[in-house]
Length: 80
Image 1 (cartoon, rainbow, N blue to C red):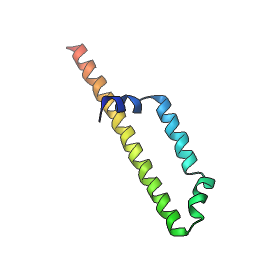
Image 2: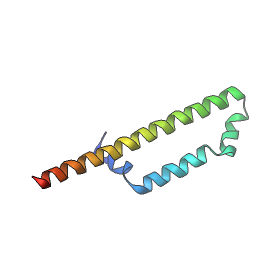
Image 3: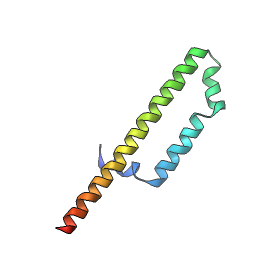
């Protein structure tokens, strides 16, 4: 991943924004818009939303691991 994306994913504000966005997306009135058409399309939309949330969490974990690895390398260089 690019350093710019890693830097963005390490920001506290980005975590808060993603949390609020996730709360809005799984809120019942928002989900009811998709469930109103038919039941199958509603379940497909919920499943796709779940996949997106899992991918975002994966990217967040990669971003946090990347920064901690970089910090560990810097500490090791300082000790040498």
